[in-house]
Each structure stands twice: as C-alpha cells, then as structure tokens.
Amino acid sequence: MDPMSSYSWLVFALGTVVTWGLYGIFLHMGQIGMADPVNGRYKAFLFVGVAYFLTAVLAPIAMLMFKGTDWSFPAKGLWLSLFAGILGAIGAFFVLLALGAALSAKIQNAPGVVMAIIFAGAPIVNAIVSISMAQDWGKIRWPFILGLFMAAAGGYLVTKFKPVHAAPAKPADKVAVVEPSSPSDSPRL
Image (cartoon, rainbow, N blue to C red):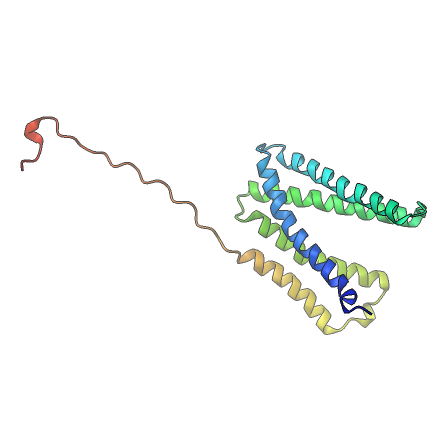
C-alpha cells in the first residue's frame, strides 16, 4: 500500500482547515468590499452561492460524467445530502450575519473572533451528535471530556485575549503661526 494514500485523508482534512480558516476572513472582506452597510452581507452571500454552484454543482457533474456514473440517486442519500447542504448553507449565512453583527458592535478583528468561536464550538457539537447517534456514551473516557473542555476553553481564550490593534493616531492639530503685524513687531537681528 502506498504510504501517502494512508495519509490522504489527513491532507484533505488539512486542506479544509486552511480553506475554512480563510473563509471567514475573505467573506468579511467581501462584505466590506460591497460598500453597502445595509445589504453588503446579502450581496456577499449571493456570491458565496455562485461559488457553491461552480464548485459544488458543476465540478461534481463533470467528475460524475468523467467517471461514467449510472446517475441513480437513492432517496435516503439524496435527502440526507440535501439536508447536509442546507445545514452548510445556513451555517455560512450565520457566519455572515455574525461578521456583520461583530462589525456593527465594533469588535476588533471580527473575523478572528467569530471564526475562533465557530471552529472551537463546531467540533464539540460534532462530537456530541456523533456519539449520540452511535450510542457510545458508555465508552466515553475522561481524556475525551477533557478535550471537549479544552476546545471550549481554547475558543474562549483565543476570543478573549486576541491581539488588539492600536487605533490609528489622529493627525496633530495644526499649530497656529502668529505673524508679526508690523515690521516693529518682528524680532531684531
């Protein structure tokens, strides 16, 4: 077995970490870039939808055609996948709303704060739901519980103690220059 194939899952997972880590930053920049304080977030989300169409509709169709699929979609897989997509889209919309609300609240480094909370909280939700679905609560050991608390504490610490940028210095007021009103007022050399 090729050693790299056994780690391909990790490479793809780290690719997701990088792209989702950048997602909030660029979504926030896109919202600001729309130059519309009222509707900018909705305009940005519209283009998130366009991007999803390009990458999550056209690309899989091309891959399925290339691989010669049979084009059958069992109802269970279809509906669960559709529901997962709806959850993802709602989550993306909540990210956008959180970024906008953080901006309105004048939270410095809004993308960093919002995404730290999301990326600390999402694994906790995932772990709790996965264990509940597998009915594995009897197999839980203390390091797992500690890990959940550490994830929550990490999200809190990253949010609470984020670096704070100093406000830009205001330009100094111009000093009034008093000019002599007559030659006799000027200093003598």
